[in-house]
Length: 433
Image 1: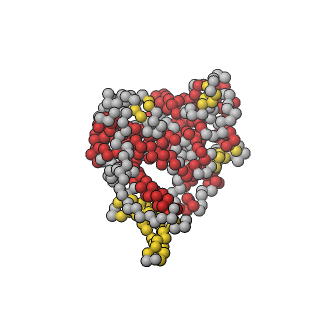
Image 2 (image 1 turned 45 degrees about the horizontal axis):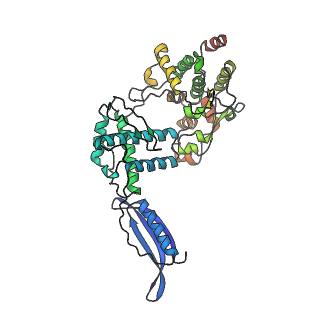
Image 3 (image 1 turned 180 degrees about the horizontal axis):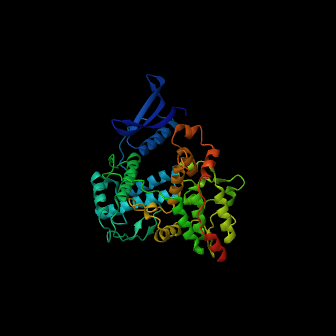
């Protein structure tokens, strides 16, 4: 660059407000002499700073001195555009697909209520200037009311702008749902205030307190075994049974279990290599992870393979369609939930262990994960070893950067897991073949 040296855009906080400072040096002539002069301009948004940097570069490249004063350009934006930008940012930071769907649903719910309160038709975007502290209060108040008849028209999805039919139920939202909806809308609003002009300054926090969740009663391995026996009674539940067996022995998430192929299991070394793409967090997605497995898992999977036609590729068989073939995205969660329901009704498994009283959403898949951790904790296994098995983030700097838990310690932990109490399940299944 002949007449300028670098142009940088940096974020700063001045008097409690976030601004973006554009700095550069350019060659100027004063009194017949040329010298390097330092310049800087302050912008209220990141977008304005990036655009100013581009104008400065274009000016210097043609050999001129940039003398433009910074003017405030109000760009009309919408909450819809802000929501799209926020979701793209979350996606760029490796948020899981299921997490992105939850975020999109929360933003959509917030947008639906705002349209209802402000009488904004579906054909128009929601102007960003309607955002205010009072609007958050109004949205929270409206979500506490029965929503029947409030919004039954087609709504526009923030992520892909596809129009779909959405009919609300009559049940008011829980306090947890209200908090999640407002918090995610506020996060998107805060990003919009940084990137776009004309967006009101967001408040520091949402006007409702966060929900208080208690751990509640933990499921036991015996509870999980009752579910396995219930699933084994129905031949159509073989996919859910295979997934539940792996979850019971490993504590993995259902999405991770579905991604496991036979090539990921080393039978001689008794290890599973978890593919990075099956991870949930950005840390898990960064690399694959090797965990030991108990001999009981291999034995139970071999028994299932001997009874039913096994999948040559996947540990958990893929549901098949006559024309389309394996359904990669099919989840056994609904069938697993029915297994817990039957175990509660017939075997006396407390409903609270898989459907906590203080949570609106049940956790039939996650109950296996909770049971494994509770079992190992009762065996006095170190927390770092339990975290290493189930994939939780390390709790100390030493564990994060210097010394991971030795696989020998993890192997000792998984061998403490009790065998599944199958009862007469295998004999009955052999007779019914």
